Structure formats: structure tokens, C-alpha cells
Image 1: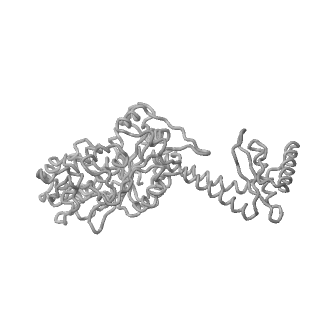
Image 2 (image 1 turned 90 degrees about the vertical axis):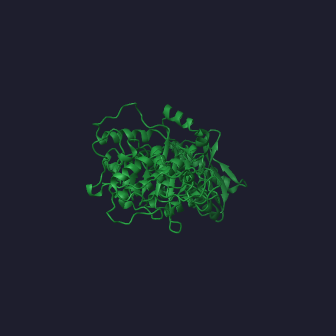
Image 3 (image 1 turned 60 degrees about the vertical axis):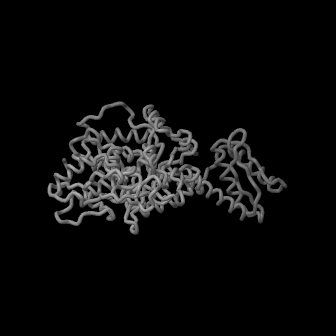
Length: 506
């Protein structure tokens, strides 16, 4: 086994003994010995503190997030991120690679970054999974709160994203039962934060338009005709006035002149301006109102436009919550997820690897960990297969019991002193529990949850690796310490790249 740690910290992995049949009972889905054991599970105590994944049925949380429940879910999501020890993420996409080119061992990291960045910029996300791993001080276990977001870049004024699709990726999603109608019709909208902020600045500029100097004769005639029309209307009994259609330039002149007329002192006579869709395009409509009513309407219109921009940005608010909570982020084979997330929710990806590293540090200030890279360092355990399913099943469901036991026997005189942390879904988050839980594989929320569970177990393995002789061994009830994997912060798995591992932390 090759570890990226000093020789003095030689690995001594946690015991994972074979369990008697009566103690297994869909291992990894319900905690063995769980007090609130479900009807399909025996409550036999596990000798090694095996991982649990069950949730209480009290007060169900809708873990599938769409446009319909997105706004109502935001406070719950924010609280989960504030409470968590770390969070895990996972993405599903319309494609990965723009070209069917084979990566080479001698590729420069700058070239690899550009390849990944092109895919992240030109394909689109379809789902985003978020699992916040909250440590319960009273129960001495992780209680993850998991969310599965359908995300779709809904067209809005000034933003209509184009993206590519890869036939193989769409076929794969369809084979996993992905609901494309739900994605398109009900997906939470999103746009990069830089684009949202640009629209917000544009809205503020609209309140302070530059003066247009009227010089052309036909423009002067246009202004005089409009002024007379408005003056006659104010003296009439008509409540509204629809101005003649015009192009964008003439419409800007209309706004400018109407603003001057609104400021004119006419006592209690005033009006406000609405933009409406006419038969031949956008038109301005005037509505009589007192100066106070006109001012109130203008503020309501401005707030509505502000809200429309934030609504169109949608999921970007969650991505900002992830940044602002300042908690460690975890992913499996994370390089793709990062480029897709930053391109979709933050900004256009920078042109160089050093600038990209700075961007990652800006949006993930507490650091990122790649569970695939962590698992690759434990080759004696995982034997070259570090796919998420293999790592999860091996650590959680006992698939690697024998390999771990043999390794422990070779590494330590005290096999059986270490235990995985207990993990069970937070109350109400029960969608991923039970014998059918694995049917959710490749759903972003479930994969994020699997990643978080794998990370918690891997951290415990690295704790054992770095322990000193005679040190008190970790029990199931002890929270894993991320200090054990601090030397692997920002290290990403890069396929066919054997010489060194790119690091985002420096």
C-alpha cells in the first residue's frame, strides 16, 4: 500500500469483523442495535459499530426539491448547512467530454484543466445532490440531512443559456429512470452569480439613466407630440393612456420625458408608467395616480424586478449558502463536479489552473476532499476499484470485510479497537432508507449521501493510520477528526495521471 503520509504514520486500519447472519439484516440500511429499529430489521448489536442509514418516520421532509417547493425549503437547507460538520455534494450532467479523446499520462495539468473546464462550461447540470452531515452530541452519531435538487437553466429576460448534450449521458440517465419532464418543467432555475449581479447592477442603473440630448428634428417632433398627448390626457376623464409603439431608442426618450412630466408640480394629479405588450411589441401605458401612489407603484415595480432576478438565479442562493457556511466540502471524483458547479453557479471559469485554484478556495473556504483520491491511497483495501459504489458497499455493507481483516492482522496487534461512526438519517429524511435504498443509485441526492458516508468511514481509517501506539482507539460514539486527512485537503483524483496529484489548497 502507498500512502501520501509519513512512514511513521503507517496505516493501521479499523477492524471490520465478519458478523453473524442475525446481526447483518440489510447492513448499511438500518443501524444494527438502532433503538427505533424498523419492522424489517433486527436490533442486534454490531460488534464493529457498522454504519447505519435509517431515518425516523416522524415529520417527513420532501427531499426532492423542485421549483414548487424550493423557496419553502431554503430555511431548512440553510439550517442544515449551518449545523453540519461537513457536507457532501454530487452532480448529474447532460455530458462530460466534448471530444472522445484519450487522456495521456504526460498531459500537463493545465491541459487537463482546460479539457474539464470546457465540459463544465458547455454541458448542463440536471440534478444536484447535497447531504449535510450533522453530528448529534446527544446521540453521538451523524444525522445527515439530504436533498436532491432538479436544476434547469430556465430562460429569462437577458439570460437564455445554450448547452450541449451527450447521447451516452442522456441514455445513461434514462436507464436510471431519470424524469426529463420533471427536470425541464419543474427544475429549479439557476444562473451564475456574476450574471445575476450584472443584472442587478443594470436594474440600479436604470434608475439613473443618462440624459439623452434631443438634436434631430424628427425626435423633437416626437417629444412635442408626446408631451401634448400626455397634457391633454391629464385634463381628460380617461384613467389610462397607451402611447404609440416605438423602438428601444424612442422608448428611452419616452421614459426620460415622462420622468420630467412626473416631477412637474400639478398638485394631486400624477401618473405612473407601465410597460405592456402590445400588438406590435412593447408599449408604455400611463395610469393616473396621486404622487404618493405613483411613488409606491414605482417601488413595488422595482422590488418585483429584483425578485424576478433572484428567482431566475434560483439554486445559486444554495451555492452561496454552501460557501457562507464555511464547512468542509466532500465529493467523489470531484474535479468534474467542481467545474460544473462553479461554471453554473459562480462565474465563467478562469483561463488558467492557478486562477481556477483561487476560485475554488473562494467558494469553498473550508477546503474540499475527494473520496476517490482518499480511497486510492488505501490500495491494499480497495484493490484498485475506487468507484463510489465499491467504496460504499465495501465499507458499509461488508463487501471488503475480508480484505480489511487481513490487512489489519498484518498491521496491528489490536484488531478490533477501532470502529466506524454511527450514521443514521435525520428524522424525516427517510426517502433513502430500507431495502430499496440502492435503487436510488445515480440520483444526485443519494450519491451525495453515499459520498458523505464513505468519507466519514475513510476519515476513521486515516485516524487509525495516524494513531500512536497505546493511543485510545476511536469508538462508534466519537466524532471523526478531519485532522487525520488534513494533508489530503484539495487533492483531486485525476485519471491516468500517476506522477503527482493536483492540489487546490495551495
